[in-house]
Image (tube, rainbow, N blue to C red; front, side):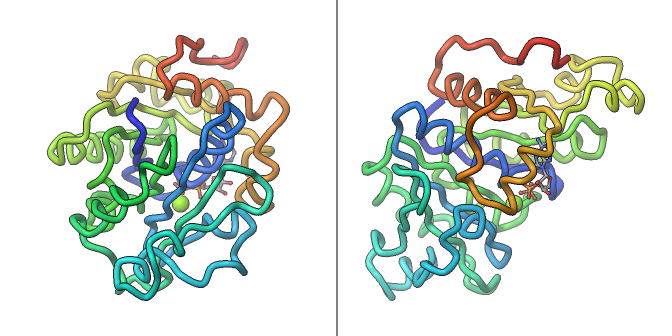
Length: 248
Ligand SMILES: Nc1ncnc2c1ncn2[C@@H]1O[C@H](COP(=O)(O)OP(=O)(O)O)[C@@H](O)[C@H]1O
Ligand SMILES: [Mg+2]
């Protein structure tokens, strides 16, 4: 995949922000310098997840309005070296246009190995802005029909926007629950419905959930985060096995 990646989904709550944080932390573990951009305008949350909520003076809209230099809206994560954040505007009315956002990302991308953009759910204007500078996309879905259908809509919109290298992340996967629900015969059926090539299956795991509230510093070590190490490898084109043994 190329190095500006938008993380998107049709429905909210599929795990986009969680995937953004855990993937970024894994890329950093693999020696990469990563900029996370929170594009969930009016609903920002990555600053809390990175434990730098108190540090944020300027957000992306300040950078484009000239209230600060572009670089001044980029903050270093307190706990993870080489992980940086540009916060989303706090107010929804400060949404940025696609062309301006593209310029913003173009001006900072050279300083990073990867730029990961956390998109708002759905295919509205905020999503279009988030996707506009991206050369790759991860669609995050849960293995449920409504979530998958939302993912297909996102896929079509990404195609229309000309984003290449689109991959599917199935998140919050629980083998027992999946069988019990019986929405799909198997994971292949989910992938077929989603019409997108799979890059990762992330298990439902409370250790992953905790990252949302306690911060990215916890996004390392142990089995729970091994899947993100694999995803990070695959994002860089490495031939890493997709899932952990026993997960499916
Ligand atoms: N793999 C996972 N296992 C368990 N809980 C998860 C997982 N991924 C996300 N969650 C939880 O699901 C909720 C929604 O995740 P979030 O990343 O905020 O979704 P989104 O950004 O798509 O709205 C959060 O409570 C988060 O902790
Ligand atoms: Mg989110």
